[in-house]
Image (cartoon, rainbow, N blue to C red):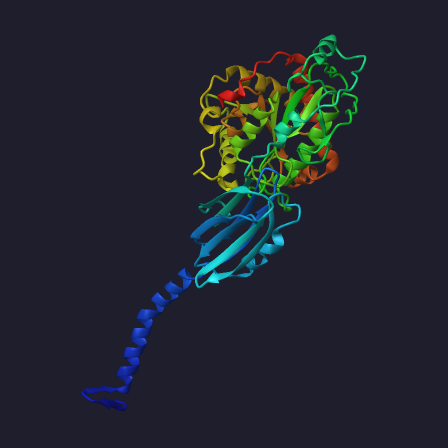
Length: 468
C-alpha cells in the first residue's frame, strides 16, 4: 500500500513521505538543540575553599571555562560574582558550608539564581579586601578552574610581625657572649637580637601568635658544637599545599601533608636550639607560589632556606633520601633535571594569576651572581645529607644540583630535601610515622648545626630590601 494521501489546498503527499520529512527535520535540528543546551548549563563539578592568614582562595572547577563578572559593595563589605550560563547544582549550593568561622576574610557566602542564565555569588566579608578573579586552564588532573583570591586591603605580613613585635627585655644568661651583652645596651636591629630578646613563636601555632616566654634550651645532639652567636633565622618551607597536593602515595598519602608535619617538627627543634629561630613559610594547607616562598624568606633576612619534600617515581622500588642545591650550569643528572622540572611545575598545579606582576620576580629570578651562595648551599646540603644517611638509605651518595626555582634566592644558602620516596609503600608508611618524622627533623637540624659551626653567620652581608 502506498498509504493514505494527505490533501489540503494545492498540497498532497503520501503519509509515509510526511513521516520521512518530519524525521529528517528532527535529525537536522536535534544536534543544534543539544549544543545550545550544553552551552546554557555549564556544570560546576567541585568547589573548594582554602583559608589562610595570607589570603583565602575559592576555586570552582568545571569542564568548560566560566564567563564571570565581579564587583564590590560597601557598607557592609560584600563581594559579588556573577557566573554566566552556569547550572545551579549541588557543588554551588553546598558552597555555603565550606566557609568556616575561622576564615580571616570571608564571613559567609550566599548562592542563588540572579536572573535567567546567571548564578550570583555574594560573599559577606569581615573587612575591606583586594580580590583577584582569574581562570586557569586544564592541567594535570584539573579541568578549568575559576579562582578567587581574597587578599586583605592592607596586606598582613605575619613573618615580619615576628621581627617587629615590641620586645620585653629579659636578663641575659651568665653564659651569654660579651658581644651580645654589649649589643643589648643599644637599640637592636631585627637581625641582632639575641634569643632572649626576640619574641618566640609558639610551637604548632600559626605565624604571628607570639609567646614571649623565654625558649627552653634542649640539649644539642652529640658531637655537634653548641651555637653561641646572634639569633640565626632558618626558613623552613613545607613543599606544595592547597590546590597543589604534590606527589601521592599508594595508600593515599599526600606529599603536602607529610612535608608540613615534618616542617613543623623541624621548627620546634630549631626553636629549642640556643640562638636559633625557625620560621615556617607555610603553616597550613594553602598554596604559595614558588617565588613567594623565596620572597618570604628574604623578608625575614633568613640565614638558611630549607624546602622539604617527599619524592615520587614511576617505579615503586625507588627509595632513599636526597638533598639538592641550585645549579647555574645545568643539572648534575637526568634524574635531578626531571625532578626540578616536576617541582617547578607546582605553580601550574597550584594556580598563579599571571595577570598580576610579582614585584619580586623581576630581580630575584634574574641570573644574579650566586656563586658564593651556591657554594654555601652545597656545604649545607652535604652536612644534611650525611645526617640523613644515618637514619635512611641515600638515593645517591652525593648532593645533586638542578635549576629549582624555589632555591633561587641570591643571598640565602638554600637546599631542597627529598626526605624519602612517597611512591615507595614502605617509605610512605615511615613518612607517616611521627617517630620517623622526628628522626628526619633531628637529622636536618644536625646538618644545620654542623654547617653553622663551620660557617659562622656573624657578619653575613644582606641585600637591602629596598632593592627588591
